[in-house]
Image 1 (cartoon, rainbow, N blue to C red):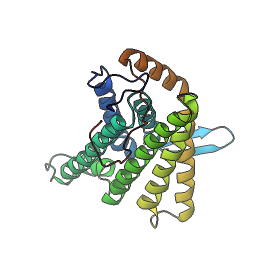
Image 2: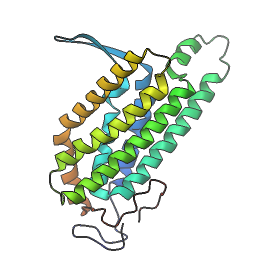
Image 3: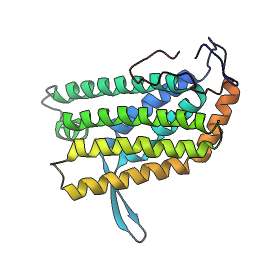
Image 4: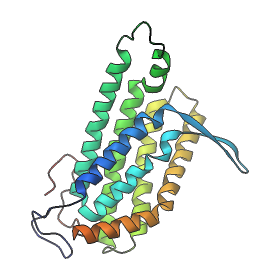
Length: 242
């Protein structure tokens, strides 16, 4: 925490009861949405639209932005920054581990290598694009969230959650899809998937606003903290939370 304690801010050295659990939830959600969700293209038959195909991970990945909003709103940018870095390192380890496991020679009697490779054997171009997009998107989300809280003096939480998500998911989508698929997919397909997935993520965030409100209110009460980033160093290249 900052050395100077703002109104509603916990004293320096204050012990947080739930911060570690939220970090674990964030990292777990991030790994699952990238490892399991990325391996499947799902389809829904929508009224007036027909069949709509999408990457299954889009259903759960936006929840990482909800958790990021909660972290920044309650604990501040610096502690949210630590969680983003924890997620980034977890993604790097996940990518290295899955690559090694996929490339290991299978036993002669095991017939699952082709399916295993198809699900978990992502190209490094997609992996690198995912990491860059996640890093930029999450930090943009936390920065906008923190700055909007100061500007609004803590009012209108819904404006901060949706506004920061638009910016964060905008960075994420604008980086990921071109970096991962430009030159592989037709240009029109890249732009279509980029736009539709961005809209799905933002709408998903908006629909979860009541959940965000209840979670933020409960955590502020339980943790006895409501952090304002008046004196925060917003560089992403730092791990300390003070």
